[in-house]
Length: 536
Ligand code: CA
Image 1 (tube, rainbow, N blue to C red):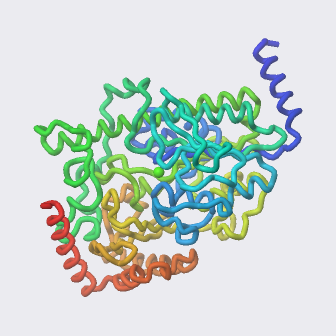
Image 2: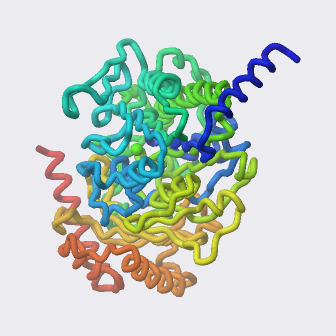
């Protein structure tokens, strides 16, 4: 027998002997803002660049979900959904200001109660102490890319105990912390539940210096809708006669004068608009993909260690991002929209004991279902407080259980904050997406024009033709509005928390001629406000 084989064999025997508990470990890996377009296994225009060979290995050896969605495309809310198994109107984390205190960290509590050794390492972003975990080492807030500080347990109360990793990149440090925990602290009498969360590739995409040359000489493939998309959007996203195009949605090119990547990256001001946009796009994508590469390389390190100790096949490994991200599609940056690229989450699961290698599913799953699914793999029933449902059965059989959801629900509350996205609500089925931009803040103020959009995903997967006013889709619109109203009731987003907003939602629901005239007036008024603000 070859020497290395003997070593591997004895390690396997050793780990088997130590493992009295044969339930699988659960390793939940989440990056921040890592979108499906930037994962090879999802086969987008960027796949030929081979951005994620390690994550693609998970897909080759496990199952890839093509229709996994966040219910509110922004960091803290999505994390709250995963931890609580509840929609944001139930867990109360509507926006970046929210938090989840220890007694509501249900996922970790259930795992711990069932005898799992639990740890939370990396980006947390839920403000208060991750007290439901046996161990934590988390970035404060967004944390830093370089020389990162982490909050850990210690003598002092949260958040006073910290450790700092001078000279290190956060992705390297987070991986080191996890490896150290597995090596020195994991109680191998128990299976582990480990949440391993990267900060990367969140903005502003500060990659480790070793990636400076990665993709340096490559022209990054562009999405077509970075350029022409005359039938995309509505009065809600373009304004009356396109008058709000500069003010809704931050941009790659110079379209949005308040915030765009041409200015951010200080692109040569003598360049034409198109050339400046192309230049900014390339800088943006290269920064982003270099951060992604850092995550992928670090995961190779982590998986190698799990192999070395013989635990990789005893571990349910999940890879996801807290939401998707706009990489120039529709000339947008960031997330927050219900449009596909930032609404869709990557979700790949590897567990060779029961999940078929190389399988794919188009079942609709939501981030509130992730917790129940992990609990199910650990043999734990979904607690009654969680609204989500386990899709372990889909992972293991490829079949949707009877009564499985055929639609997902979306709600974005942070009206016009940071990236100029109006508040909206919507429904997605496997065939269609209906979006309703009601356009106001929590008090029903700072209004942008209400409007509706319908995309036929069967023939328009990149969502460039709004079919809402196409008479051929009139019946579909009526049906989907009815489904959306029922869905809102079913998930409990009844509007009692913010009655002024709900009144506006009701007012523009049927969107008759009178509503359309009002929307035009709101558009003109909003343009005035933005122009006055620009003058100051
Ligand atoms: Ca995020």
